Image (cartoon, rainbow, N blue to C red):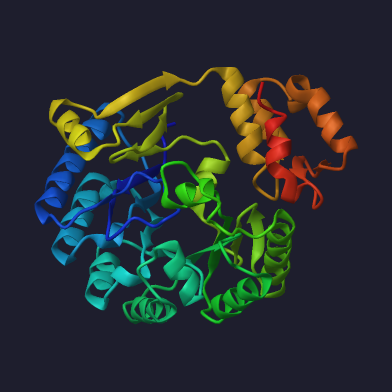
Length: 380
């Protein structure tokens, strides 16, 4: 079966956030964006002719900031997507786009809704204006309220909000206030991530100079436990380590990744997983666009060895609160998890990190905040 999910990368941003190491570029050159859309169209045409689509259940447009596109560019981009993929969409397709609260006016949102986008993922991060400025975000909390009101006006009813914790100078009280304001928006989904200081970011430079006052590990853990508790209290079920949803509003696209299913990936720096092979596209724009003139823009492509696929199935699947489906693992690999990872599993169960329940192997509540340590055990 061919992949039923498509990831599309739009790499442009108004500015570079201080913690961001994603493949993103700041530009004020409209022609560069049009040239990129031409290259993206070419990549999609070649990809889908060589690896034909049968059905599309989810599309996710990430970045960068996809809503950086102006009205004409957004319409042109979504018309390319419609032309390439529209006839394969299932009736209940989930078509998500990342959005920055500072770049979503009513008309742009109307174009998005009209051309098939039905789920928005807003990069809010915090409701504390001083913290937002500290992160290098261009929006303030008022822009968040305005953007969500605008989205509701044009018919959106499925929203996700990204939040961050473990931020410089962020206290537990500040984080609680952010959660209170977030719950007041009535959104259907939350993703919440702890700050990771990545290389080649301003935060990494500050961290090396000891100028990044981060909360202690204990405070960060406390924030995570408060997050879980408050999400549950407000009716958002934790279905993955960092993701919470109202019933029926889990991210279908992201579950593709956690279930280790295949997906198409197009755009500068995008990753894809098709027919047992993973690939990585060229990241720098000039290289990506030149390669698209010559064929596919891939800089790396390899078949995933069976052993690696089994490790991925465990590490990704254990991120889900339901855990790894034991029968699905056995039918995919012709061996049980106990055949392959028996000693590791027994050790982690004995330590209280893992438990087997109803045909699934999953992290315990005790193991949840220590997930990365458990995952590392499955890497050989």
